[in-house]
Amino acid sequence: MTAKKKWEPFLHYFPYSEEDEKLGMVCTTAGDIDVLPNTVYPPNKSAHPMIFRQVAEGRTLPEFQLVYVSNGEGIFAAEGKTYTVIPGSLLLLLPGMKHFYKPVYEIGWHEYWVGFNGSFFTRLLEEGILSQEHIFFEIGLRDCILTIFNQIFDEVRTQRPLYQLKACSGILTLIAEMLAYKRRKEQPNYYQKIVEKAKYLMESNIYGDINISGIAEQLNISTSRFNEIFKTYTSMTPYQYYMHIKIHQAKSILEQEDLSIKEVAFKLGFEDQYYFSRVFKNKTGITPSAWKHFIYQA
Image (cartoon, rainbow, N blue to C red; front, side, top):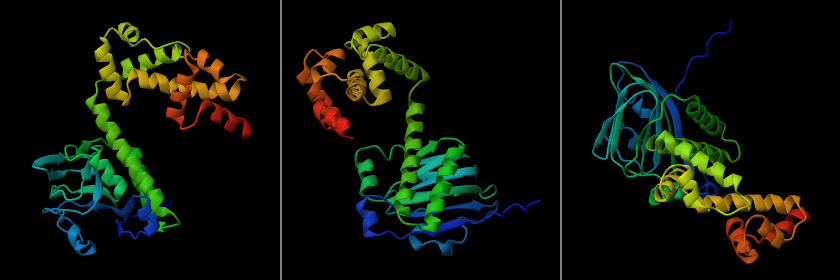
């Protein structure tokens, strides 16, 4: 019988090149640690650079971090609020934000973390996608989160070519999971049912014209309420979504059927082929004729 491999803490800080910085995102640190009950936190302070040592007393970082607690209990304080950390809690630490966190001394915890920086993440903060108002997430114990952290750890341990890019792709996945959780929590389940039925009605009438009021009536809600729910859930208006699926269908028709641009426009319910061409170019970056030419040349 094979002996169980002993868990060993992982803690590291990573170099990055000018090439990495040009991408606008770099992974600066990553690790995990099991803090046993009745242990001073953080353990082994000497392994941390000075700015990271005051984690349990209060510190300000020049970078972003995500901290995920997989078991144990503790507290997290920032922006004048204190949160109770339980298994499945995810903390978002922002540059320049004074904060502290620590496990309950008698209980301990197991934490995973990853640090990152760069103009791409700064832009997410400037655009409000990341926010000081939303820094604590109870996303629950999820294998996929631990898998992503371990994939990041594998990349930064080996530091193979482009490991920074691959590590940052994992960080983006963590951010996406975090934001998706926030959106699901904020929106009632019936939002999803309304949007799914609306999408079905639009896709069923892809060769016609959209009737927002008619769809809202079939959903038994007002037109304004329908627009509000659809935009909140998808970040698109119903009309924008309808145009999106029409253009997607147009690409398929151009690929598979020998029709003129005018015929494709009329088949999809556009009365004006020039308007169809403008919408197509707006959504794809090229005209329908250029798309058709590209497909047949491929």
